[in-house]
Image (cartoon, rainbow, N blue to C red; front, top):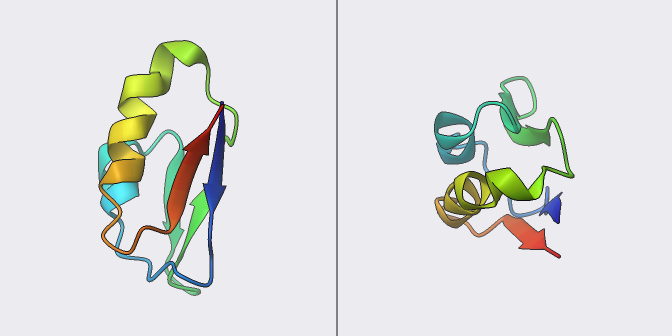
Length: 64
């Protein structure tokens, strides 16, 4: 499983960070997400998936 962030779409709203701050952090200088760990373990799939789905501008994807 891999997290990908489309930085062209990201507006730094922070929904992902609010839901999964162990995987996402918003760089306030750039107003963009920083993916802290792009390969989470399978055991965290539901947690990460919920954070990815929370992105209002659809800047995050989760692939197998």
